Length: 488
Length: 96
Image (cartoon, each protein chain N blue to C red):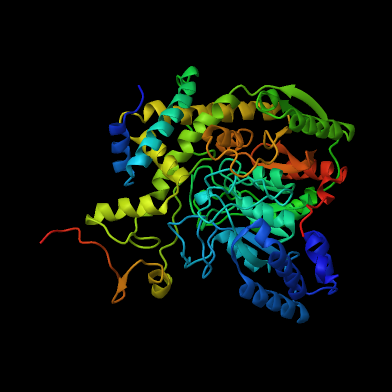
């Protein structure tokens, strides 16, 4: 049994652990064995925390043996995206500017994961500072899609998605600024939730675009996603943008019931640029939900077409400010030879940052510079208001909106690296939710050419329960989530 | 009004990026391509529309002024590029 434990869901494993049919140590061994055998093909991790995991698993087993009451996820292996701070464990953000950075503190999400007895098995690869849609911008090389290792796993939380899809971890945390949880979840055939902005503390999440960033859970089933959301959601005094909204038990929303659920189908998400097969998988999924008691109606969100442009002003503007801290002075990479203190910073940054990060810092700096602020940054923020208002109006009429998560299935490694526009279109369906701050979940809804397709469900702010209910009902009526990539 | 090499050089100085010549040319092309896409936003009428900086209202948060331990000095210094006598070594910024 030990050999294939990594194939089971967190809910199933939790049951086995609590009945002492397996131990946390055995389960951790199983995940480590899986990492040993397939990591050379998948490259999901930047750091594998073997010793840490072994020690933590033994602690959980001891506590259980003493009869302590443990959280449902105690003993379950988890991967954390490498932009989430872990005290004493290297956190690189996929960047050559932080190749050996060891955080002196844990992110609040990390702390909550540890406090629940989850076992950290490694830090997952990502695009540098979470900027990208394929992990190809990682300074340490791309991760690979477990369904076809010549293809990208999506990004920026591509390592997290690949680790969960391939059984190297049962659960993972990612971060989502413009789709970085949902898009890789879709491309790797797993579930990924971007919570409402403010639901999960960002304390210790290395900042990319602070008004958009949000940590969220990734898993192979909707119930597992809800279990992990229970762990990380909630107010944190250390993050001034974290909200005091009460946190329900999200697993209670994992019940098969969509009677009366009103689904809006925004036409802008199904137009040119969306693969016909992707669109048709998502439409079949909507039909399925209607068979189960929901109703669906076509609708229009005309500002959608402007979201990408607004995002590529707002996110880089915030990034240019957030990334000013990497100056070669206090921590991180420092260039070997320099002239003057400005020279030190300029040369350090030129050496440490990759092309995509430099491009975003440049456009962000320009958009915020004197004389251009009104034309770019302010206008983008006004468009952000229009997008929010449009969602507000849509949610007066509908409980959820359903769209494709990504307009295409996973693309080949290298295919889009020289076409920045095509790369940016990977996030066209996911960006609007970040601008509006609303929650969105991606759920597997089919395959095209042997590659997973994801359906995105959006709801109004703090309506994650509605997302879980719709996603769970759909999942339980399908077999998609039971399929596994063929890796050996 | 496309950005010139000189314009981009100025932005690079503001951004504290010492771009190599080849990189500078790449940035000129990239920035101009992006600015072209941003033109699309001019199509929208945003007269009287309030800008959104955060999707939720943001307030200053203050903690009680209570003493608490700071981060361990060794852990902080362990990340520094150069340390001498418990201090981070930095380039001289004043002459004389």
